[in-house]
Length: 76
Picture 1 (cartoon, one colour):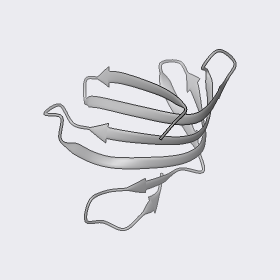
Picture 2: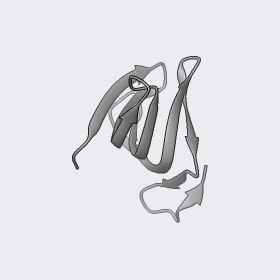
Picture 3: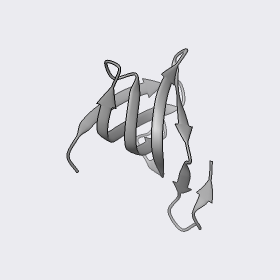
């Protein structure tokens, strides 16, 4: 994967985000893939989204689909 990469930690674990594009100084990301890990760095899920926008300390994802190991894809 190429593009723009962001890594961030929270009380729940870590997320690594890849985006094909970035606008508005990184506040708006396009064609987003987020890889979500728990506090023990165990992979939880992958989230695919058309766009993500940074709002008050969290990312708002549009048209998101969640893919978890062993599970069917679902909308977020």
